[in-house]
Image (tube, rainbow, N blue to C red):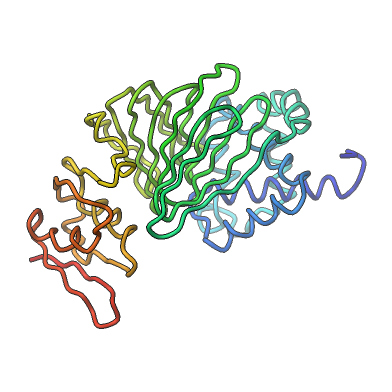
Length: 330
């Protein structure tokens, strides 16, 4: 890309704009779709977007109040109630002292990085699928799952758009394996682990090896290290809960046609069951979302899963005339 081309500056500003929206914590589904379309429209767009991403990886040196000032929404500005333009935002980044120095060195290198492999994979209702990647790593996709895979020379990126994926990663210390799920990043070099995503909620469980989980808005990131037999849940606010112990044999048992809940919150149990049902299911009992339950269920008989809920939780199940399922407190 020619840096003297006036269009280059505009494209850089667009990349900053989209990266900001995707990491501000309040992007709408329409914005997420528009960002994805922009990145896929032209390879230059993707390189610029990854350049901004690398730029902000160096942002630990930038004071948090400065980041907040740059990224604040209009109604969060104490004295100015108009939004920053893309150009103003880009200038704010360029003036960020040490961060700007780091970016001047890192970004040109990153922008030359070409994708070596790219693929979009998905499963439908009732479908599970195993894929072997070019590096020998394997991915097992649960039902109703979509992932985008991009391999670079120095990174292997899996973006979990929705659903659940179990990864068996071929070790490569020079090229980390990264799973992105919303504002959550799971980084490994070689291990076996599961990532589950339902809208903005994420759960990471490790069967063996270790993973580093980073979550939350980019100016206030939670970092959690998980070993085999551990899991962590990331809430809609991007905050990581306490690390919990899990039985390694219970990690991603859906690969064998069953799901095991061991002291799991009811909200997640219902969401998980709903992924196997052809009709929508809703938990209309906010006070019971965190109620802990346990049980083993056959994923190939989802109706039986729902019917068994009153036996493990204080709820009643109603099937509505349009096929929807409503779960309420008993």
